Amino acid sequence: MALLINDLKRHHDSIAAELRAALERVLARGWYILGPEVEAFEREFAQACGAAAGVTVASGTDALELALRALGVGPGDQVATVANAGYYGTAAIRAAGAEPLYVDVEPASMNMDPGALAAALTPRAKAAIVTHLYGQMADMPALLEVAAQAGIPVVEDCAQAHGAARAGRPAGSWGAAGCFSFYPTKNLGALGDGGAVLTSDAALAERLRRFRQYGWTEKYRVGIPGGRNSRLDELQAAVLRAKLPHLAEWNRRRRAIARAYSEAFRGLPLRAPENFGDDYVAHLYVIRTARRDELKAALAAQGIVAEIHYPVPDHWQLPPLPQAKPPALPVTEQCSRQVLTLPCFPELTRAEVEAVSRSVVEFFEKPKC
Image 1 (cartoon, rainbow, N blue to C red):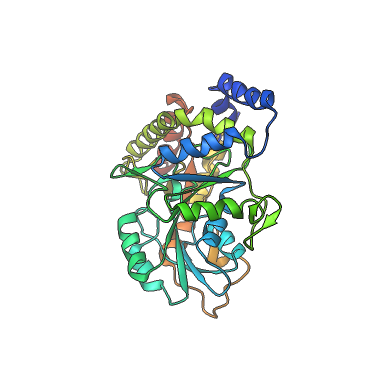
Image 2: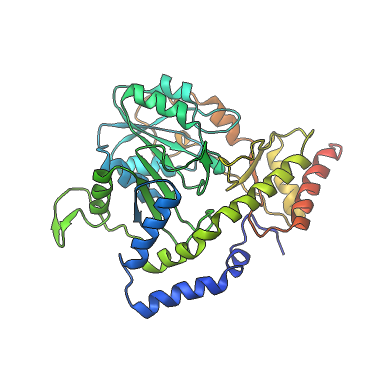
């Protein structure tokens, strides 16, 4: 049997009784949309992330789009973002009617480069989406300073950073809004799709609640344009409430696995994560090597699944940007050719970690043909 990047069956088996109790609680109540489970999860998750309010939605991409809409972003505007995070931010920007303004990333963290952000901003830029990629928080103090000087709000894309914190301040509490995905493979994942926007701005939270429910200001009366049906259901909220108390321990285990990998890889011709502090929750353990495709094939031959997050930068995707010349993103493009994700999830055993480590080491120690 192959060793997967993320084994959801093992993950859910570890708390199966709690999940059943959560689902049975919802079934017994008979309330499935915008009920007490959603209200409780919004409150509990916002508190855990240091925000005043939480507004759940149907997906992480919806969270980003509706956050932009609630901040007034629309047609004719630009939103600064990175091009190495799987197109999700780009999709949300385009759905809001705006245009992505791509910014290159730092070589070490692969997160948005504050200097590159300052250089890229134009008068049409109305917001920035800052992604905490692979579970590593971006340099929020520096990025917020650049954004403040430009007079634009920052939306945090925390889809891969549940529970991360920098200087005691959690991801999702730094910007005007913090957007989360609860896709099943996330550090805090549902049993289907789901998302949330966190904010400490009461007026912004109220606009988000209206946007997620058709733009209603009261039932069946549309008061703001651009609304939609984007709601987290009660069953998923109950699942997330059952999982939330385990998040910190799961993140500790992820960091321990990442640290073990990186220690095993010292001296090899690859680049591995080096930071194992609270601002890194190892959503994905990603190495970089010029021999990425060879290594991926060698691991597959031994039953170890490795994946590429992400192979095609957003500015190379369709539809093309309106400007004639594509942006210069040398670090982003180099990383896209080198990144490789190894298995990393809380239920991974020590023996499995050692097996993956040994396979990588042996690949590089074996003479090239």
